Length: 60
Image 1: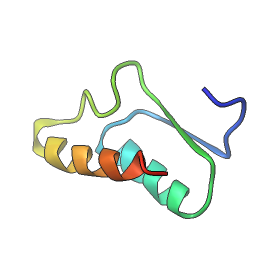
Image 2: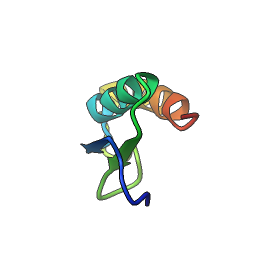
Image 3: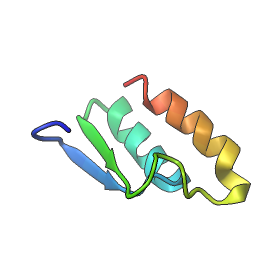
Image 4: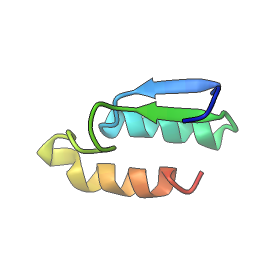
């Protein structure tokens, strides 16, 4: 885990991952933390979208 970040997002559901992606695309050092695997607890209706956002976010 990095020593510091500009933004820390707690929760890696669709909303958390989207927020992290927006921050990362804006040039902020962004850290996502969750009690499980990233995207693990996403609602069934958003699983596919969460996986797509996660894959994109991991490129930053």
